[in-house]
Image (cartoon, rainbow, N blue to C red; front, top):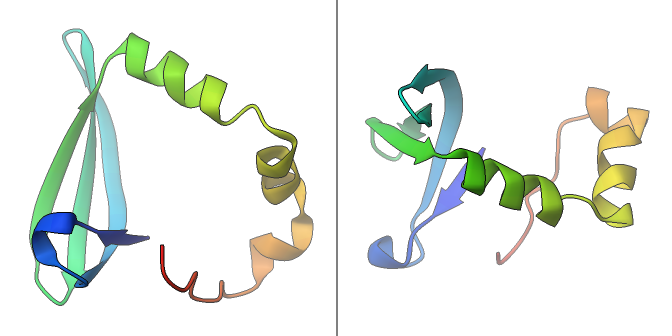
Length: 82
């Protein structure tokens, strides 16, 4: 996973999803950044957020992306400027 923040300028963080746990009315996504710094990042989502994410992802381009078996086994190319 690659992440960027406007607070970090053009710095790109390399990260991996560590876990997702339910806590009360929230899902907590635990992400560890590995490069250029080691941080533990936590993001909470409510059911409202999850519904919005599902609605946003209900596009033909997203389904095509997920269902393309060639993507499952190859190393992804860098997305460029995102």
